[in-house]
Image (cartoon, rainbow, N blue to C red; front, side, top):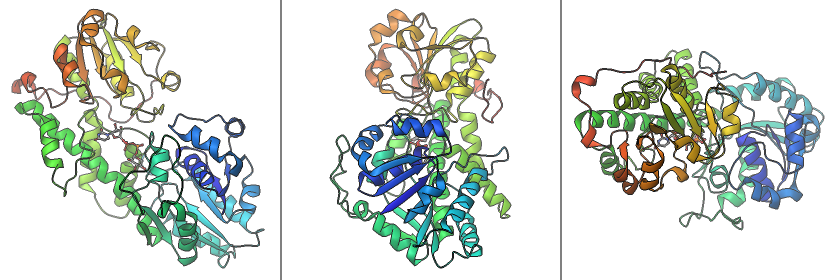
Length: 470
Ligand code: UDX
């Protein structure tokens, strides 16, 4: 099928490249000309495993353009995958999205054959209905139908999640649903040769395809992200209690996770969630509920817990070192999670902000996010491309992102190069062999160091909203 994808962020580009990989004829469009020129020469605007490899295979089927009207003219399906960042009040900013939707409708006027306008951006419930209304007001109702097709891909696994999804959700009327069923037929039936490095999960033979109304499709995306965020905040609170009562959150998570009604994933306690989706989408759902007249108390608590959780590392390092002034502290990992260079809502930012506020000398390392981090952090932060330089003579290391290269260092090496081999593990990720060879503090895991209840009431209070330092 002929497809136009508007927006070349994680969702748009992964969708476009994957559809081209499956044999569809795809044009990816973006207003950013330099990004499009880079893509034309095979350079990706962000790091995402496997994307470059499948782009190489998909090359004959994909084009990149800055012209939305040209791309839309020839498309059976037009995907809107434009960013919807948060406004200060938590509502999603829809300016770019609406402008792309209007331009698309305008361009579809000149098209003779039918088309489906598919929304992949995360938007408030009712937005796709609103676009359908604009389509009808433009006199295109018989030719164009609008669908909501929410995206559940994770950064760092975007290609795998697109080719091997848990489900495909389509909200819309019959013609839109059938066009998308046809577009995704090879994914639904898993009838494509698996790309190198991306083996098909052994259990996967058929992907559930759910056809619903547009509003239900839209809320399902928010509900999925809010639920996963809730699991993380829940286990983080259990971890905080474990710290106070001398229990181990690993054991608690494993035990509750074996109950299929709970499930074992997303129960990794740590310093909370970040990234481009969970923080934004939980705030957006809170806003959507509020403006519909409903106070979503549980979701507000999820957000509040996550905002506070980032600062637990600071409480722990202060408890060990007393004061931080003039002390070298290594911060390990800057991106919001491993396998991405994305710094959006990364917990490393407020953690570093807190360390600097207390006078620490911050030496930070990340395998791939240093360039992006440099734009957000002040020059006083030493950004080290060699892990050794971050750790050397440091009085503590704060593990913020669980990149694999941090997890299996030789404890003897750590003891030799650090002034004090103290690791505060914000992801509970170090293995037992390393833990036992250094001074180790995790989150809700080290019963031997559980806090003195008299100290438990002391908590750090910083700005809870994400703050950029420059
Ligand atoms: C998420 C959703 O998983 C995806 O379905 C949606 O489309 C977009 O948002 P992503 O933001 O890429 O994807 O990352 P994810 O792997 O879900 O992790 C989100 C955050 O939660 C990360 O900061 C991660 O470190 C944290 N996390 C995750 C935990 O703290 N504990 C866990 O157990 C799992």
